[in-house]
Amino acid sequence: MELDELLAKFREYSQQDTTVLEYAWNYSVEAHLEQKRASGEMYFVHCAAVAEILVGYKMDLETVAAGLMHDVLEDTKIPHETFRKEFGDEIYALVAGVTKIETLKFSSRDEAQAENWRKMILATAKDIRVIVIKLADRLHNMRTLNFLTREKQLEISHETISLYAPLAQRLGIFQLKSQLEDLSFKYLHPDEYQSLLAKVQLRYAMSEKLLEDFKTGLEKHISGTQIPCRVLSRAKNIYSIYRKMLRQEKPFEEIQDALGVRIITDNVINCYALLGTVHSIFKPVAGSFTDYIAVPKMNLYQSLHTSVMAASGEVIEIQIRTEEMHRTSEYGIAAHWRYKMGEKGADRHLDEKLNWLRQWMEWLQDLSSPREFIESFKTDLELDQIFIFTPKGDVKPLPVGATPLDFAYIIHSDIGDTCIGAKVNNKMARLDAPLKSGDLCEIITRRNSAPKKDWLTSVKTAGARSHIRKYLREHGQLED
Ligand code: MN
Image (cartoon, rainbow, N blue to C red; front, top):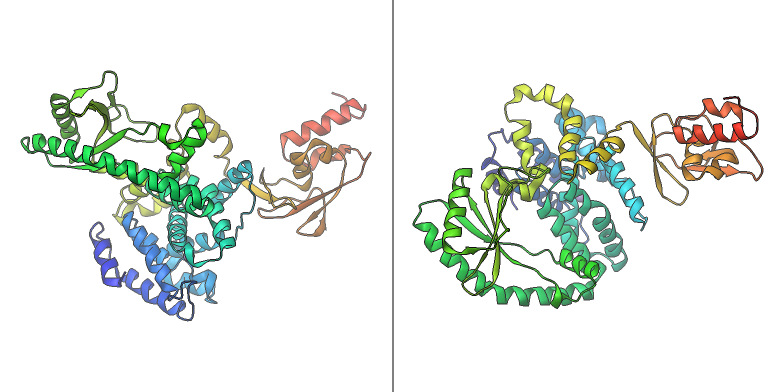
């Protein structure tokens, strides 16, 4: 991709002045001049590719500029202050955010740990746009993974499928999530991937003829109505089929995968008009109609769903939606960003203050059930969390102000009860000194050692406090 192409694509959806983009482009070229990628290409090719992905999601100017320069702080000796003065606080914060995430090295194979890591990445990012840049970066790295060693491929694919694909899903960027999953799957299980790919393509080829006939029939009728629309066949996510096979313990041949098309039009009234047209040509399957336009899903998803019988007797699933609804379903928060942020600079400052909280609210809306919503509210919305590493590299979330004693009780109440000391980042530390996010904490225990009364003032978590009280009460050292 060349600078001119990038600018042209950006101008298709934004009025923002592109001077900064040109400047960022040249700045990044210059900064990475000496660097090469594993493929042998100039390093900057990667930066341009990340920016191209971001423009594809119609991200704002700051995000695209930060995408162009996302590796500048990590890979070059340019001081943070110099960069901040050059590009201002907003772009600096985005690039610094991506750089910070880069330093988190995930190695655990444990699913529960992955969830804590995802939380930590979110807490570290502070701005959803940082995550979107990081996801675009990861997507391009996955697309060029063939140039790395097998060991690296496995490590990065594992990290992608357990950390980044779920993040993309929670942001509602399904298109990105599917791509990250399929690319990881290709490296993690190459044989399964190849055989499944071949089968999916075969099935797809057979159904293609059927869908083509269906589309032609449909288009003929719709063209008479003068309603503008386009008909799309649904994309396949190979990994999701694989997961379905594992879940249902069935071979590919027995997995039901309904044929589906999407009809995309300009406005809501035309959605209903098209639904009427579809039902007048094809017989609807009883009970299959759902109106997610009148009643959107919790994650803001909107569409009309119906299933009809094709002339051939096959059942075809149809989704009818507007362009805007389509963008939301494919790009999630990334699609909303531009509109929510507004391109009028005036509200900007107030907006920024509310960003973090509002992002969480948007985030929460992506969850599927009220129960999940409330659970997240309890755990995730405590913004004042810190993340502490165990010597094995696991991550434990704790409230701000938590001490090594809290950490000991989080690991196990016996560890807490018999704790006699702690090392923080390999140095002896006081049991009541507050920990910082990212600290590595090791607890030293001695058998038959016991909780002391003054510990009650050294802990922050309710769990630790109640364990200590329980012990003291049982040993007559505490009157209720
Ligand atoms: Mn990168």
